[in-house]
Image (cartoon, rainbow, N blue to C red; front, top):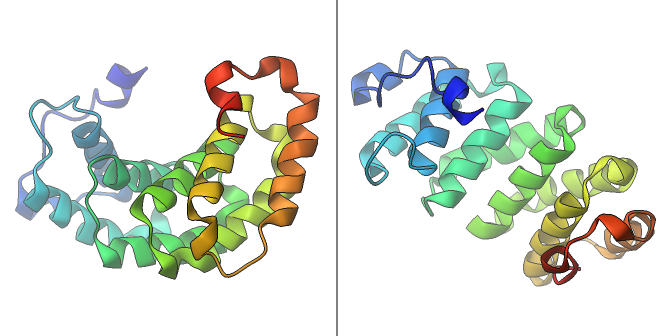
Length: 185
């Protein structure tokens, strides 16, 4: 539950403390700030400190930490180019470690942030989705389809195999789609 995820957090870290926190704690703070569970509007200077501290620990971040922090920064519409670049590189290297939900969060986040430099990450994740499409929920398929469709004009690789895989998987799961999911396909 969201409350249990935040049980170890007593409040946002002072900016100076963000530098000493683990990747897990940093992604947790970013997630909590973005989801409004820490009270008040997200604090841009604090999120900036969290982004830079996270980059120092990105190689020790779990796949869940990567997807949480990507989601958090996209949700608050805060672009930190160094974070996006670091996340893009890490996601390329570890796409196979992400869960379908993690892939969905990262792809959605990257699409919302509209960073053409993330093209290799989009391609690595598209390959992963093609290989593991059956593992995705109908909502996940719809979210990933929306993300790639909304960003397709800016991508420098052929997305047709990805959309072909969506069609194949969607037909097998057609009864699990809700109307709002179908509108994304």
